[in-house]
Length: 335
Image 1 (cartoon, rainbow, N blue to C red):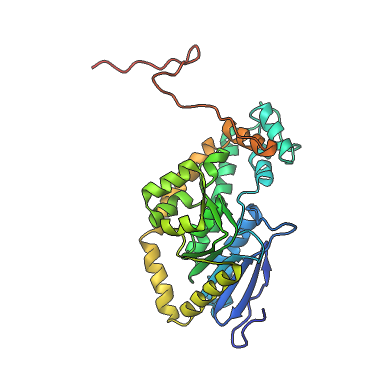
Image 2 (tube, rainbow, N blue to C red):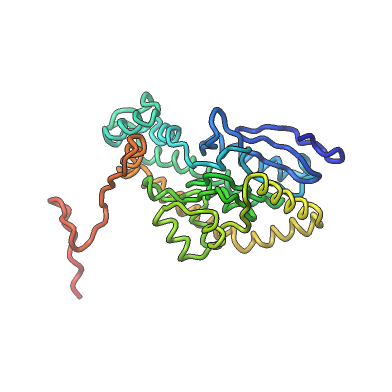
């Protein structure tokens, strides 16, 4: 759509997989439109684009002073996002690092990832590889957090699949509308990952600790109706057109309110949550930089490529665990 005549146009109309438009005065639509498919997979370019759009374009008064509300949604017929781009993630996780087992190479090859950038088992320094992973996680976290910390409210409009990291994205938005056809899942535990870019930090505040733990640990799919009953989604609509009308009406209403009061309200609401969210993001970033590269992650990637259920190893140590020779734990100290 052409920008409203009395509003200054944005300096860009497309950033990465997103199209930017001003279909109504003071309202910016950020529309995910991936190519060549409609999956809107999450990868480094996706998170970089998020950070630039919400951390710079829609936060800098010199660029977007006329914008009072933003809407983040998929293009018609596209999924909000089916989650992490496993092929590109496999490339990133093992780029210029040791292959921790032959299975990792096999898993990468089956997912179509590049296997030419791995080195021999004895090469490299684990600490430096982990630091590189920690930096990457921080960049992805900042991409999503830029939505929560954007100066203007951001409404999420969800259609079709909203899986894994996509839930991280929508929990950073100020509120969420969805179509009846939407499906949600905090999928990370099924693919051998501890969710590390926002869901575990923001979801409990939206739906409560018990439900957040249930969804994160089961990693099951749930419907738009369930999402609304849990408190993740505020409104559900019959189809994409109805959802589009709903987010547009809400955005126009927000844009008609005092910009100072709206932005101040968001800042005060954030003051009670975002500092703690950042502390928790720092914690999971450190955890995953040490433990993300696991046999479970390889097993999940292999199972995904072969379209079979994953078979994970049991790393839990209990009183019934049989320890290999030399690994028997010491008895507790006597009083």
